[in-house]
Image (cartoon, rainbow, N blue to C red; front, side, top):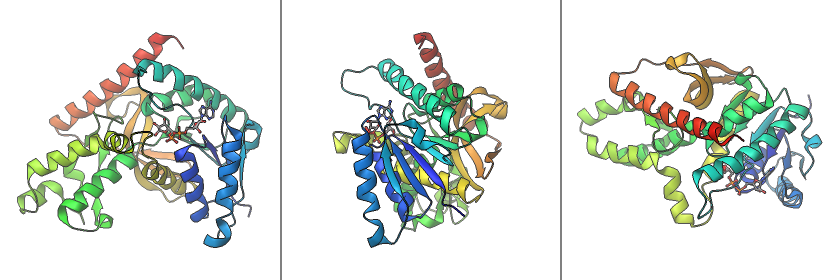
Length: 317
Ligand code: APR
């Protein structure tokens, strides 16, 4: 059987890390597309040259021509601009929506059967634009945010409890950003929910509240430290977990931004909820029962995403 083909649109920090992980995990061959094709080709060659050392055979190439992504099984999109000083959120929306519009055209023409993972920010709006403009079925176009947010939450919880990250599960819903909703009663250490751990004296509500706040600001904390650029190792690892679940039909339950169609009483926009990812793409949306407080937090997060979409529509781009 031929190797799978994975197209990476955007060969920046996340794009390069994605290609490296794909090689190390032997998930398939890689084509990197960028408006700077030399950067894409250089990174592809550099990573491929680590193959003999690390023992992988993935073929890697870089291009500025969309036809090279033809027949890709998975497309991961990181193309776009970061928010620069002096740039308003609307400026970023307009610029990145323009980029995503081009990307959507390329995917529609050359990889219409792919499973597409969007990472470009502002995530919940960009993935919606990508699905609308590409016309691909909604179950094949998803946004990466929840896996990253829950990974950050898991790390901070594991550090607080002094246990392995492997034994910590976390449940995060909502939009990517300040309004994300970590559900502590569904977050556990080896199946024991966080509220029970508070009762057991393992931690306090105040410490958990601080961890929740730190998680919601996880991206900002890294931007501040890096001074230029934003997080890329953990975002890349998170998107790879999603791609792997699709390619290997693992049917993992992962929080992803998906198009809601009545689930959670919401319609026609993308937001983060737990879903099953398998060979069919998004095979199932898990609809959990909220408490009144959780529902209010989720609705607030949805309102923030819907406002961003309304702002975007008002820009008329
Ligand atoms: N088509 C293809 N690639 C493009 C286009 C375009 N129209 N416009 C820009 N790019 C490329 C840039 O040349 C750059 O190589 O997208 C890449 C973006 O890479 P970085 O600036 O290094 O950004 P990165 O850290 O990889 O993050 C990408 O993911 O998490 C989000 O907020 C982040 O939106 C950002 C995206």
